[in-house]
Figure 1 (tube, rainbow, N blue to C red):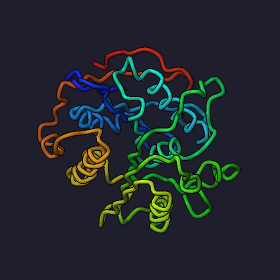
Figure 2: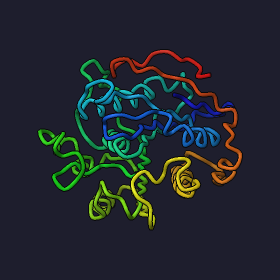
Figure 3: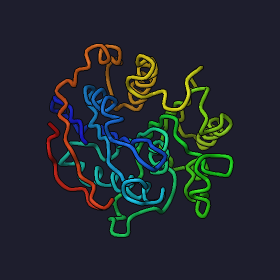
Figure 4: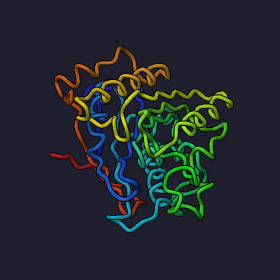
Length: 273
């Protein structure tokens, strides 16, 4: 589901691929429609991706990561036709979607066998909303991934090639422990990688979603996201999240769908009515 800026960019634009939450079990790309529409207004090609889940497709969490990597690679492979800079592609997501977004930037392997490995599936930045990125015994989902958790847990696979990240949590978060949040940032910092962490006082898991708590946290997190992307040189101008919430305008950003068949082949563009 692609939100294309309405104005033609003079140079290749940045892109972000969002992955929905739902415990690797369920979820919908509509979760990140408003995040995508807002960023499209500021010249970012924003995609809210499909990926396979257990309830719908009978797959394990490892397959979710494979699909996410395929989506990042697709955007990079087709960067020219999309008008995207292949070196300015971000991953984003919330909860389990935040995990797979973080995994694209950290974990090795978990690639579909028929993928073109000469094209990197690693993003150039990560925007993570309460990501369940600790999958150890002390973290989230261990029982489902215990046979491969060390290779699967983003917190335990940070290296010098991990891209810059901005991470949001609420202080009442119950899926990830605060020490793990701070450890992720510390590991990034130790490698000289830009990493921002905001723990907001009060809210719990899922606080960032559009429509929650009168959009208080959508406003806060998307303003910080805007400023983070601005520091990377992907966005210019000041944040206008408050105006977006007030007008709920799509700014001419057309929603288009990219279909992901069997988690392998992205094909076609169909306008969503």
